[in-house]
Length: 339
Image 1 (cartoon, rainbow, N blue to C red):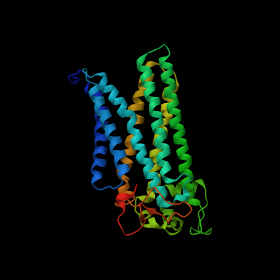
Image 2 (cartoon, rainbow, N blue to C red):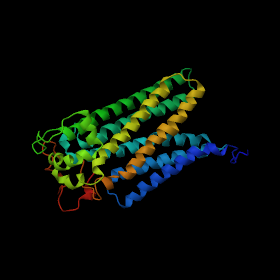
Image 3 (cartoon, rainbow, N blue to C red):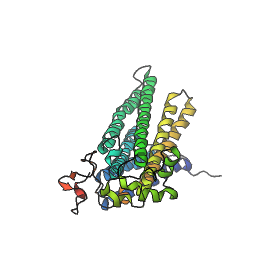
Image 4 (tube, rainbow, N blue to C red):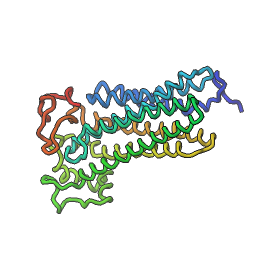
């Protein structure tokens, strides 16, 4: 059987995975770029477009690196793209979480809405120097223990990211449990309220048909009345599940990273694990995130007008506040002022 080669004398099949991911990320990047013409959710637009541009660029460069005449410059740029892309994408995810908090009611969240963005994006930025230092130390061979120092930095970075995900899930499930089960004056009375157990939690999270009437007729009374119409959009009820899926995939990626850097595997096994990390867990995690938000773009979830303001507000009286001097929920179009 004849094997087809490129000019670099590499088998055609070696280009398959990078080409497939390049096309996938190219589509995702193109979608979020086109949505700029409609979406007024500027932070989300910038973060997701930039993040997926870097992911697209990484796999495009991966194809070039396979060529025989590729230089180290390609590899350095690829490393930069690979590690900073998730920071942008995840900041966009945290932005939508903050929007969701406001749409339900600020009093249900342990964190003020803007803190969901500030805290977790800051942690993501802080770990970047650890990754850069690890790569630099490993590549320099400046001293005998370079490999072990680099590995220690990698482990520290992976552990910090896993702790970040754990903290996120604690705060996230605390928020959802209060949304689903917290008793308020305006909420469902005890005769109608669902008991706060794991089974009912997942029924509400998965938005099964048996609880949809309960959500609309009883639960909704306790939420921020200004966003009643937004909460009754078709995709809104599924949005907490979408966020949970994205963060679960990221958590699996974090666990795999710790396994990959913590054990002394032989060279062949480590190379295989690295390929799994890059092409299966890493690329697939961001692919899942991109595809989920293709379907659950804030434009489709919260509406074409960006009326859900993250900044401002009072948790004790969440309905009485203004956005840049404009009363929230007023007839005046304040989309261009809202973060």
